[in-house]
Image (cartoon, rainbow, N blue to C red; front, top):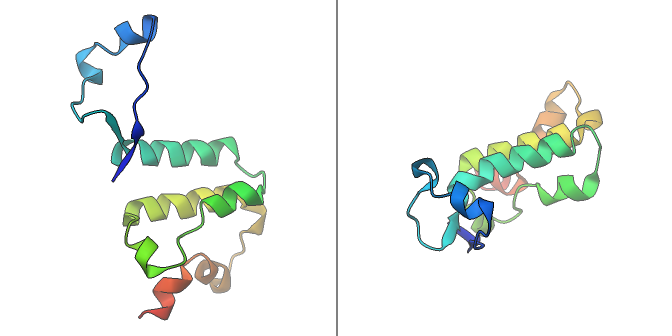
Amino acid sequence: MVGGHRRFQTGMHREKHKSPSYQIKEGDTINVDVTCPGATLALAMIYLKTNNRSIADWLRAPDTMYLLDFVKPEFLLLRTLARCLILWDDILPNSKWVDSNVPQVSTQNK
């Protein structure tokens, strides 16, 4: 899975990225396998305990099996974790709450 196109770096940022530690040859697109975990957890930390439903709904698991096939399991776990960190006040110590965080499509297709 690939993301958008890379932006051209200018000024001091261009020199910074000439270091061997920044040189990953992947073409002109961004590899979301590398960027997704950090970006997801960054969103979780930015909106930690804010109960912001619009951001939390953006992190909700896909609602169709077709879309679910495009999300890696580890990314789905991170999205669910991030959603729960944002909606901190909604966490309940019972199995009903845990079941509510499992994608409905996966429970229907057992």
